[in-house]
Length: 239
Image (cartoon, rainbow, N blue to C red; front, side):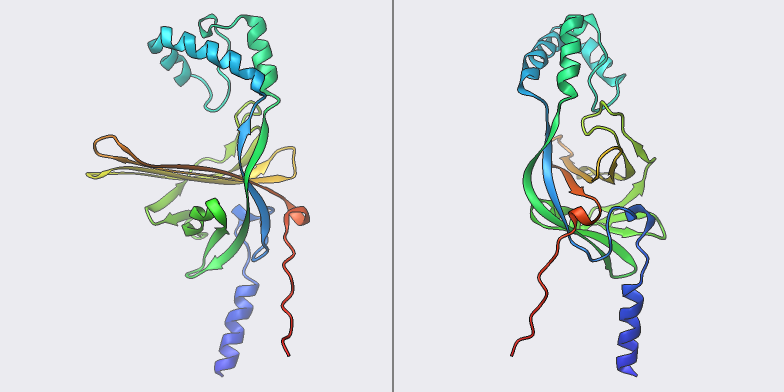
């Protein structure tokens, strides 16, 4: 009876359905090769960025308000106060369109079912910090050591945004106590026109005095489908 009970538990676990938020991105217990990276535009863009920074210092109040009214992560709309001519601005946008994902570390991701009918994306290397997150399909929340990350509106990123055009789901925790503030975000999705998935994570901790105690960001890209799956060596039968 004990053997049958264990077999039943294993059978249920093996056939557990992958939550919808992970569908098309991961298969259960199948390791996926991934890369932590940064988005890098061509170096020629630096001369235009320097001009905009100079203009911003001349009128900090205007620049702050202008930035607030613009799309986050995307180039600011043209304005003569940015310190660029229209021709320079057009060249800046053309260079921005050539930005690329530059890998800084190769890692591995695995979707696993965890204790209490929750799920986790286990990661290696610097991405290991996301391994502490647990997704609860019934409540549609992620739980971290800091608390619960609540579901936000789905992401539909503008092609001009820093990561490009991609769609996905996002969760966030914001907490303030007498000790300080904590912000934590987790997002997962896929590029609209490429065979890659994305995991985006950020955690910030700020003390009550305003000092930054922790600020860690991750962008992890992985190939979808068979192209991204790792084939681990089969165990041998020792004699």
